[in-house]
Image (cartoon, rainbow, N blue to C red):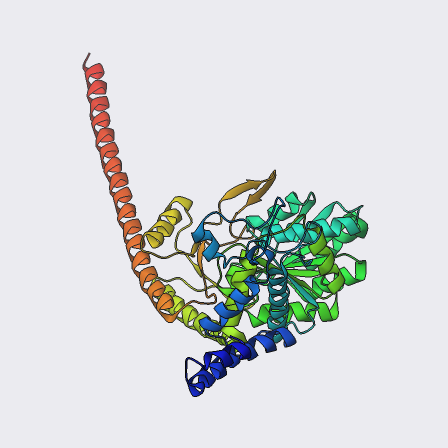
Length: 501
């Protein structure tokens, strides 16, 4: 209620009571005023009442919710189901216009403002967690792979002669298929084994740039967050090459926002060389439903151009989810989650080391992977490893990856030997577990307990199988010896019979 309405209400309720209510309401209004004025993620998270208040106010600013509205167009945010209407807070127009996903919609002022505020809040968060020089952010309703496609299509417009994308290998289909989908030919660079860890072959990247010619290279696509034993790509060294040869550099930072190390490497790469864009998932970094990502970069005009490359309007659902979540967390809440994740990563590594020692295994040394942990496995047969993975899954363990290092997969005509291990000849089989944002100490300790039990049962089965095989072999050997002895007797008897005759 505004001040005039409250004054009228004094005829019904004592003014002192109304004054208390007005003061409480003014707190919410102040929060909203500061958000719109400063366009930054609040330090402290808001309560749900305040978040619903701003969402409802923004919704009322869209034309489909005007009391006097008369829509005669083909898209008027008409929503049949009441459940769907409430689920989306009556926000039905989406974001952007036909030529630009970031453009303001005349009949959706509320949705447009919500979109602008979300992009500004994400930018503020990125700067506060390590990439201080980020110039612009764009939240898009697509997961990481399709967002990478959008970046590459934008680069195609700027580099019409380009044909290739140089890609240090990471065994994750989405990023590889994004190159194919954008119409480029991937040049796969195998990783170098440094101890247990797989790292970027920077000299090979430079050789490929010079041999193919910089103008034919659309981009070099590097990776931060990934499954161990692969480490973060050598972003700074690649960025220097990109600057030296004038080649764009796109970073797949899928779940790297939650890692200060990943964000630091991106910041340093931009400082010493060239980084055109870095792309990250909203669900993996901000604990929202799947369906969105953030494209960010150090040149606001390039990020703007990416927004203009997107054809048509877009769903506002991922934007609304992120808007509400950031308001709920606040920067302090998000940073606290990041610190908790770091501590749990250490705890997870310690428990996995205890399990590994019990069975004569070891945790692989991967100092350049701040999120994922890999532990060697005692067998190499892919069928046996599949059984171990199934045992874990049936006991409620999700997210682990059991890698045989012998699998072969063909994607878009490209053959990957050792699929899953980021290498065609990684020396040991292993499983991975990730310490990601939102994980709890209960998750960590339950995983360690179940891993211990599953490994024990798995190895026990393997030992019994080996014993059975040995018994069968011994039985066959004894039977063969018996047959051999009989044949020798028969042969001797025949020889004696011939001599008598």
